[in-house]
Each structure stands twice: as structure tokens, then as C-alpha cells.
Amino acid sequence: MRNLLIYSFIFLFCMLSYAQDTYRDEFQVVSYANNDGTQNWSTNWNEVNDTNNAGNGYIRITGNRLRFHFIWNEYIERRADLSAAANATLSFNWETSSLEAGEEMAIRISTNGTTFTTLATFGGNQSGFYSTDISAYLSANTTIRFENVGTDWNRGNDRFFADNVQISAAFTPDQPPSIVVSGDQPFCPNATNSKQIVQSVTITDPDDTTVDEISIQISTGYVNGQDLLTLTGSHPNITDSWNATEGRLFLTGPATFAEFEAAILAVVYSASGASPPELKEFSVVIGNALFLPETGHFYEFVPSAGIRWDDARDAAATRTYFGLQGYLTTLTSPGEAAFAGSQITGNGWIGANDEAAEGQWMWTTGPEAGTLFWIGDETGTVVPGEFEFWNGGEPNNCCGGEDYAHITAPGIGTPNSWNDLPIQGGAIGGSYASQGYIVEYGGMPGDTPLQISGVTRLRISCSVITNRQRTYRTTTN
Image (cartoon, rainbow, N blue to C red; front, side, top):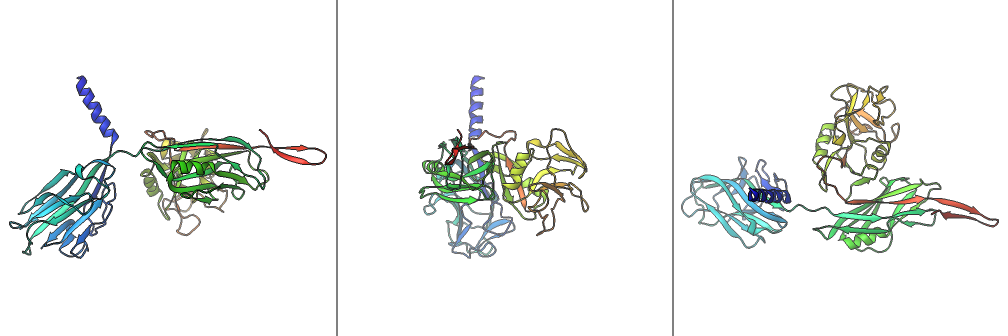
């Protein structure tokens, strides 16, 4: 019994330690670029010594299958990146028709696209399902090839068909990186000075040595047009760009952890305003999603002009961020609503509707799914303990029915507020057109805790000391 438990544990551990992915072509479309699996092939199918056209030639896609006819030296191949795979299996359905003795179709494989090994051959009049372990051929350039290895096919009715060609590979899941930052300092800004925003930073990753991108955002207390983040010094492998709408500085590599750590320490804050907010919080995030310290969640705007609310909901649910499950954002506080409305580039759908019962506005996505927060129309009331941010005169269920919540476009009523719209949004090109949707990550059951962000602070504090000759403005510690 104990041995059975041990074997069961080992089996479960192995299942949890690897992610199963597929490279697949079902030939449902006459194209050599089909990707029907969970991963994309590295290349399209490539014909050699034929037309390289999926719709005609000795090799072609017809009847939802890959067909070979009257083959001499023509062959076709496709490549997949299996360099990170622990093991892999190749499989496909096949059928031969009227292949005479000596006429054979082979499935071949290579790790470099040059030297091939024959795995199996097919001839005669028969059909079946082929599957074989190809774990000995894992590389960044694993290439499979269908090729004649026998005599020339000299009869017009010679045929070989392949369908549902698939490589199923088990990959060790990419482990998320982590970042630890520190910094909580007083600062008295003026027109000529600036302040380092991070005092220490450490980036680690159990299975990678470089990072593609890190963003630093003024996530609390940001004043567009007054606040600025600047990368100082020389960082040859990192480029920087400032997004004033989001209050975010992008540092783009790829570069090593040490190079990014040096760049983060070289970022400074400056302000041109006379009376900046007393607290500035800076979110340092691995990747390009926005981070809100108040919620501990990540956010992104996905542009998709004219997308329906239900399609946006479904699309958001397919997105992940370092393993966190995405959903149409649920804005449950003034700070979160202001952040989503003013510091996310683009206004879009959010996860609320009253489609189940008119005037019963509920969050229907994310951790808050099923939470009622508003009852009635524009004259209605907020549910005690909940939050709403409707624009003036909303939700009014105008024009034949508006049951879905959307952040109002800039320049229409109260900034960052919400409006109810029909499921397809307003007319394309108009002020109420759907521009896309906002995805939120964090708080879902099953989410793995991550440390891909950190927060530092500057506490704006200035004192005025006056003597008979001069007035000094100083930082208060």
C-alpha cells in the first residue's frame, strides 16, 4: 500500500511538473500555415520540387487532408521548436491507395533540418493511425518530413493521405521571475532637482537569466503633465520610453538581471507642479501590465475596435499573465476606478451588466462575480458597502436596451466614469463605440502567488524656514 502511494505521488508530481502542448494541423483550410494546436509551428509546411501551393500540385490539401499523388522527388516538411520539451510524440492518421511494390511514403525526422532519419514507411492499400515517441529528436529545429523513399510513383491513381498531424510535447513550465525593491524616502521637488525612486533591487529567476521588459509606473498620486520618470546614465542594452497618459516608464531589453537592476536604480522622479500630492507610489513590474498597489492586481487594455461585450468577456478569460487568470476588470473602489479610467490607455468594457434582470447591476466576472452593486436606473441607489461610478444620467437603458458597462470616453461627462451600452457598443467611430476591453489579473481561485512587482514611495514634504535675509525650502524627514 505504501509503495502504491509513493508511485501515485510520483505520477501526480510528474503530471504537475510538465505542461502538455500540441503542434497540430487538421487541414481544414487549404493553407500551409494552419496552426490548430496550443502552440504555433515554427514554420509553414514547405514543399520541395513542387509548386509550394496548398491548392495544387503533386502535393496539396484536398478533402480536408494532405494528399500526395504521382510522387517522384517531391516532399514536404514542417518545423517545431521542441528545445524546451522533456518528451514528445508524433502522430497522424494515414491512408494509402494503389501504391505498388517499391512505392513507399516515409515519415522522416531531423534535429537540424538537414540530416533525416526514417521513422516509418507506408505502402499498398491500407489505412491507420500512426504514433511514435520522438523524444530522441528534440531541438529548436525539429523537422518532420513526408518523403518518397521508394521508386517513382508511375500510376495516376497512386495516393497517400495524411491528416491530423500532431506533435504532443511535455514542457517544463517556465518559472516566473521575482523582483524585490526597496525605497521609502522624503522628497521636496522643485524645478531643478530629481530623486532616485528605488534604493535597492534584486531580480531572480530559477530558469532564465534575462528579462525582456520592465515597467515603472507612478501608480499613486500621478499628475499628468507635471510628473516625470527619467532613466539616467548609460545602459547600452536597454531602451527607455515614457508614456505620459499611463505615467509609466518602459525599460526594454532583452538584458541581464544585473543590467536591469542598474537601470532601475538609475531611474529618477521629477515634478514641475507647485503642490504635488503628498504620496507618490512607484510600481516596478516585470512585464508590461500595469500594477495597482491598492488591489495588488495587474491590468491591461486590449484594443479591439467594435468588439461586443460578451466577446470581450470571453477573450479576457483566455488571457493569462505569468499564470494569473484574466477577466474583464471589476472596479470596486474610487482608487481602482480612477486608475482604470485615467492611467490605462484606452477606454473599454468592464465586467458588469444587468442582463439577468433590468436594473440589477452586478459584477459578472472575476472574484466579484455575482455581486450586486447598483439597483435601478439613473435615479437608482448603490448597494450598501458596494461602489459605483456612473456618469451623470447613467445607467439610463437608452435606445432599446443598454445592459453592459463601459468606461466613458474622455470628454463626455465625468472623467473615468461608467456608461451603459448595448452589447455591441455604440456606432463605430462614434463617442460611444467599443474600443476594446480592460483585463484584470489577480484574486482568482487557484492563482499562484507571484512576486513580479514591487512598490517604492516618495513622501512629498517641504518645510519653509525664514530668517531676515532668505527663505529656504527644505525636505522634512
